[in-house]
Image (cartoon, rainbow, N blue to C red):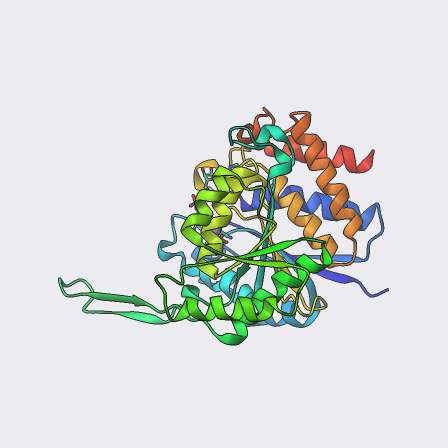
Length: 355
Ligand code: NAD
Ligand code: IPM
Ligand code: MN
């Protein structure tokens, strides 16, 4: 059986600490469970950039594109590198370069204790967000004019293509269909962004016609933020643009216990055989870095999503069960009510996997 190449990019800040624990899980699957995995450690991130100027070399991106099945990324962002120069090359090099147009971010609370809302429990928080991942305000089109003068102008264009919008919306409906979900919400600001989001609005209801069993509902993104903290239970699948997806999923992370619990997958949804990239939703959390404080469970859940992509969905369910147990038994870090360090949480996860 040919081996599946998994590239590991620990990155910056807490990235290396959480990826170290995620890697133990992958090594277990490779060495103990015999999955045909080939792990490839990549030294990319702020340290490397500051050392020799390297961000995301062409030979690395080409090998990832042509040979890898998956990439696991920790986080990028370092106060020593202003303007996130290196991070953009790597993160957007993967998302845009590999055309990973759907950023799938489950907001799922695994235990009642993690839900901060009054009169709500874990069963009320189970939303899968499909964030458009290759367009929008993120493409970097625009520029600055008369910079540093009182007349300066700064423009970032919001790019929305029919192809890009339609394929992301379709990915959300396909997910809903496969997973027995009854509704898909589309969150936009078509009341303010009358060109770009009129496209989203029109396209959403057109695509929805292909899925008669699924109710298509429109919601303005500002109202969605309100509803999610009043009562998230009516939401099952949310499709939205790049920027709103970023913001809404940090809000969503708060409903599931914080960023230490939020996993994500970046995929070319219409062709699962293509390489995909997996990363926790959180960033590099510089104040926590190097202190053994970071919660590695988002990364363990992210490995679960990666294993489903490689064809082992039962393992994702198993890892979710172990993470739930870590929370219930308080074998977790402080952000989720435990007292353990990052490595000790990894020890608990490994003991469960081995047991
Ligand atoms: P952040 O996600 O790093 O941190 C936000 C808050 O969540 C902080 O209070 C932090 O302590 C907490 N937190 C995050 N991850 C945690 C974990 N695993 N365990 C416990 N607590 C955790 O966001 P930020 O502070 O806005 O950004 C820091 C840097 O990370 C910036 O450079 C930012 O651009 C970058 N960033 C990168 C990514 C990525 O690589 N995908 C994602 C988000 C932010
Ligand atoms: C994320 C991050 C990134 C994003 C930043 C670091 C550019 O916030 O992955 O959620 O906005 O996509
Ligand atoms: Mn974000």
